[in-house]
Image 1: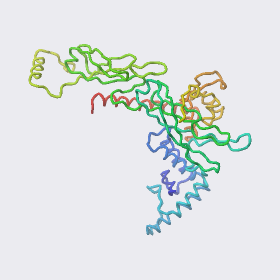
Image 2 (image 1 turned 90 degrees about the horizontal axis):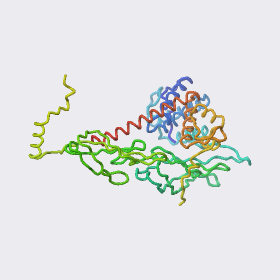
Image 3 (image 1 turned 30 degrees about the vertical axis):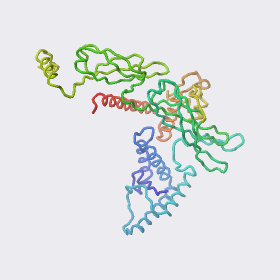
Image 4 (image 1 turned 120 degrees about the horizontal axis):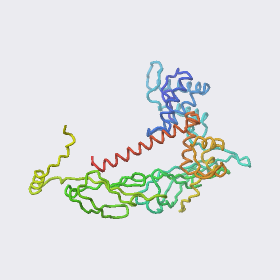
Length: 326
Length: 106
């Protein structure tokens, strides 16, 4: 286990008093709490911050840690041939190794504080209880799985396969990885972010503890054509200027197949046409599809087309910027 | 391979199960319901309450924040509401950016 400089983790100097330790911990805990933070490594940082606080706010453990840290600094200096006095301030790199002895001593130290469960300072640690026979019981670990679904798959009940591993203890108490494969019938109408509970499919419980659960968190895969807004969908429909001016009938794709829509004369870019019931299904309502018009000019015009545009420009008095005048 | 049909009853939890899954006591559950952090879908008292999986997740989040950041119970609903509002705004921003990308092909 790599040696960690807990002072650097909390961004404090080794001489910091208890109050400074607490203040630094609170500030960083707020910043990196996984339920609050959007940092990609929030979970890992929060564990480290918690671990550092657990060690440094306890006088006895802090003294043991300081001795270990000093040994580590001495050995590092010997390795690098640096005869300068040890750094007084926190190291910029708070994880370091290159000394097997320090790594082992640090691992033993962590083991003595957090026990076997280390990396022990963590969230949602399984809860220990005792059964009627006095034997320890523990609910099996829950498993969270992000579950991608295509929009089309939410319209009807869909059978999906999942594979995952859960920790299981063998009779000798060793933790093994148990591979599980399930076929799951996902009901129609699930939405992005929804969680589905598969009761008892997580890690096996210990003693009389119940088996853990699996929570599938639905993630809708972004669609190349449709944007999702709750149960409604939208699609950008490109139309030519003359189709917008004269009106037209066009086929547009929906999740259930092609549908013909009528574009009224003098339609504008951004105008929305509602196709009732062509959105996503839900347990209560059927969503709609919104076709958003976008007038698109040809990338280039031939001579005949240019003449027609010029004729139109001469005859038409429309000024799209009239509200700018005066 | 084991086949599982997602059952509605597995996605509804009674008070005992909610407490077991989120490792809280009934007293804390009462506190959470009192502060509208956990809102029962059905039932009028603790032994008849039924909760959704979404509420279970909310309870887990609330208890983590309360424990890790030493937050008072009365402050929790405001914190959770602000986190939810921030997440909704982030979701709306993503949606608008997605729509804009499809519209202007930048």
